[in-house]
Each structure stands twice: as C-alpha cells, then as structure tokens.
Amino acid sequence: MGELHHGENNLINDGAPRLDSIQKVPLIPLVFLIFYEVSGGPFGIEDSVRAAGPLLTILGFLVFPFIWSIPEALITAEMGTMFPENGGYVVWVSSALGPFWGFQQGWMKWLSGVIDNALYPVLFLDYLKSGVPALGSGLPRTLTVLILTIALTYLNYRGLTIVGWMAVFLGVFSVAPFILMGLVAIPKLRPSRWLVVNLHNVDWNLCLNTLFWNLNYWDSISTLAGEVDNPTRTLPKALFYALVLVVVSYLYPLLAGTGAIPLDRELWTDGYFSDVAKILAGVWLQWWVQGASALSNMGMFVAEMSSDSYQLLGMAERGMLPEFFGKRSCYGTPVVGILFSASGVLLLSWMTFQEIVAAENFLYCFGMILEFTAFIKLRLSHPNAPRPYKIPLGTAGCILMIIPPTVLICVVLALSTFKVMIVSVLAMLVGFILQPCLKQAEKKRLWKFSTNSNLPDLREVEHDNSTLEPLLA
Image 1 (cartoon, helix red, strand yellow):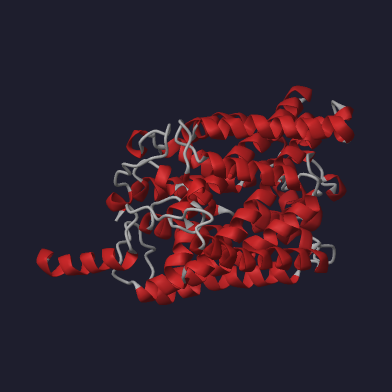
Image 2 (cartoon, helix red, strand yellow):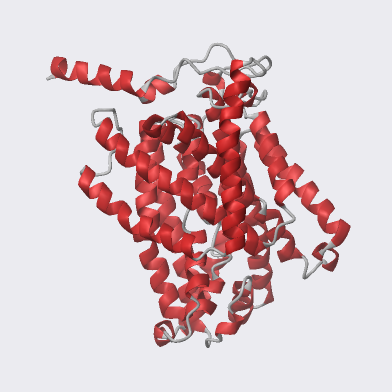
C-alpha cells in the first residue's frame, strides 16, 4: 500500500517539479518536526508547578504520556503507515466515516492548528519585550508580528527539507542550555523537594490544561506523510524517538529546577526557567534560555504551518477542496495551503494566550473523538487492509487503550468556559455549512475538483491483499 501511495504523478502544475524529484524528509529532521509539533522544549510548563506543586507535576509528566501521548502516537503510527499520504487524519476519518465527516475533521483540525500557530509570534515577542519594551503593544508589535510571520512563511515555501533541518538546529540549540542547567544543578539537588505536595491547594484546571497542551498533537505529522522518505518504516521510528525526546525534555528541567532551589510556587510562571538558570549558573545561562525560548517558538511555527498546509494539499488530492489547493511551488511546497495558513495566523494573532489555548484545545478534542472512532471502525470493517505498522493489541485491547484518553477529552471539554464553548461550536457549524457549499460549487463547476488517481481505494487494496494471501500460502 505504501508503494501504491508513492506512485508517480505525471501531471503536475506548470512550473512545479515532478513528485518523484522532490526531496523526501529523512528520519532525524522528522523526529525534530514531531518534537516541535508537540513540544519545542520545556517552555510553558512552569505554570504546572504553580498549579500543583513539584510532586503532582512530576507525576503528571510521567503518567500523562501513558494516558494520552503513547495511545495517540501509536494510533498515528498505525494509521499513518496504513495511509502514507498527505492529509493524514482527514483521510483516516473519510475512509471510515465518509467524506462529510472527513471534511469536518479537516476543518476542525486545520482551524485548531492555525489558532495554535497564532500563539507563537505572540510568545516570541513576549520573550523579547523585557529587553525591547516597544514590542509590548501598538504599531511596533503589529509590524513585528507581520514581518515575523512573512519570514517564517517564506521558509515553509522554500521546502519541507529546509524546515526539517532548521528544526534540528533549533532543537539542539533549545535543549542544550537545559542539559547544562541540569549538570550544574546536580550538587545542589535535594530529592525531598520533589515530594512536596498540598492537595488542598491545587488548581486542577490549570494543571490539566498545561499537561494537555504540552503533550498533544502527535497526529499532526500524519498530514505530511506523503513527503516522508519511506514513511511505512520511518514514521513509527520517528514517533518513538520523538516521544522519548519530548518526555525527557520536560522531566529533566523539572527535576533540576524543583530539586536544586527552594520552592516558591508563586514564582513558577511562564519564563521562570530563565530565572532558575540564572540562580544556578549565572546571567549567561539565563540569556541562553531566553534566546532558546524565543527561537523555540519559531520552530513550532514552521512545523505547525507545514502540517496545516500539507493537510490542505492532501484534502485537495482527495477531492475535498478545489484543485488549486493542490498546486505546488517550484520547491514542491503547497503554496496555496501555506498562504491560507499564514492568513489565518495573521487574522487570529490579536487573541490572548488564554483564549488561543482554550479555543484550540476545544476544537482539537472534537477532532480526536473522530480519529478514535475512525481507528476502531477501520479495525472492524477492514481487518485485512495492509498495516505496515500495527499496534500489538487486538481490537478489544485498542478499545480499552482509548478509553482513558476519551475520558480525558470529556474532562477538558467540561472544564471549558461558556464563551470558549460557544465560539468553538460556532466554528464547527461553519464546517457543516462549508462542505455542502463546496459540493454545490463542484456541481455548478465554479471551481475544479479532482482526485489524485495514484491514491488507491482502501477496499480495492484490501481485496487485492486478501486475493493474494491464498496464492502466497
């Protein structure tokens, strides 16, 4: 099935390269793309210490990956190798539940990704405004957001391989100061400080949202699986290595920061790791952490924009969006998808940090419900379809595996404010209206829609596979 998905596409847009000439993303850049899709480093986890104290925070980052990250990564590995093409989870849901729900999945996840991406230029400026107060508000801030968005969008336009190796460089630069901070902290560690807990003074909402925001989005890499070198083998490996990297990049600084200095929970707010670095090693390490924090946001921006734009390209290849969304630049990148994603970021950059996180979490949760449903349904309805990587659990085991994350989704949705709920539901209703409108536009030939003939029908491939089995026996 992987071979079929990578068949040649002989008719490419004028000026665009042949698909077989586009350089594919290898393992190491893919690991760091996933790292930036999910994490980007320990920046932003400080609030969890303020909300729950050291013990519950450390336990949270130990236990939460088993509840959420590992199941989501495993499902991404199985489904991403089953459908190694651009579009990812949109194709999964469409194949299982039909094109209407596939489109809704694409709309909610794309909107969630764009809302999430609007956060990173804002955070970048927040890290710099202490040194450059003019960036705090007004015209200078607006112009800087615009210039930064254009510059990072251009990087995406130049090619996914460039973005991948940029993610490697930024990842090493962002993680390195925390490695040094941990080494400096060793003589000062007091393990008893890790055990501090006060169950009567816990902000469960803040703690849960911080954990959820910092450990989700493992499925985002699936939307550009068609650009990966040998995705059926590379994708599962990259997800495993990225999972280890993400969890260690959270726990290592947490253990160093909470164990080496006396606890004052009120000080643990966004950016406090730079103060920890200063206390442990001096101003030079503080500056490095601050610089790494700022650049990490750039890495998360380009990684998120890549997955968002290739998702639109994949939807166009499946006939869900007009054909022009499938247009590639001379560098092989989805130029229309990049422009749409960049425009969404600029339109949403006025939102506050809290509004952005709450809105994208709400939409993301609904998208994950559709993914879980599609995953189980495909296990039941197409048991013989090729799965180059298959979760080593039966269907019953897979259902049990997704129960804890489903309960977590319900908790996150229940904790949403009424304002966020209304805005998110209205955004979802737009998708319900948009899909029939696009179908009407297709019938009236207002826009041209087409399906890539190199993307096989799941039932045909399964039939071919089941036909061959007796011959090979």
